[in-house]
Length: 342
Image: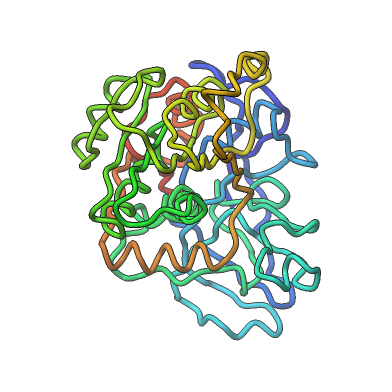
């Protein structure tokens, strides 16, 4: 099969090719697994962190990609949930142990044996991949393969983040950073909380304009004060400055949810400038999001079909994965980027 493979950690630049197009043996499903013929795979900022070594894979080489849509072409022993030809999606959560306290209490995303698709095991930047059948998801018929892909990570982690804010209808919601995840959160929030106003903070004017097109009540620069205090906020950036700026806009008792797998080291000294009385006092909260659980993915897919949410996206051929990653790094973003594998 064709696959885009990461053989060594390296920087993503305009002319760099950190991923190599190679031929690999077709995988074979094990007990309880299914084999997927991949049709599309979303491109995520987390792949940049993997490739550049900020959240490195535990071993190399690895096939990245964790927003995968395809069709079942083979089932392993004891796999009976899907039949040949079924369309399924695979998200960031590839597997968890199922027996620890976190798994048993609905927090499988915190499991010590959590495995991530495209980081701990081969992902969807390839023609085929396998997955335990319990960790594959039905895709609603309303979505094309390309439209479904971003929902599996950007949508699901955004949905989990929104839920963790504790938002209620009528609350003012802030979104700082406006990429693939935040633009889907805006759709969800407008549907579920029609009385709420959504305030978007983004460093790029095009992103601010895009937010207004999608119905944001207000959009401004990262450091710009909002015209009203906010009950809750979601930060989707890899930097610390937006966190500090967000805290200034929170109401007393407000909550900031950080939807990011890591934060940049080169600006961590900014934390020393935090002004406790104005930014954190009065019972303001900061909460992080770690991974996703299967219910997040399935609930989001159902909700997205009901609304419906049709993600804004750009398509690239599998062979152009390096270009898609380069554009993502240089903030050439309008919605999500999706590789077309078939």
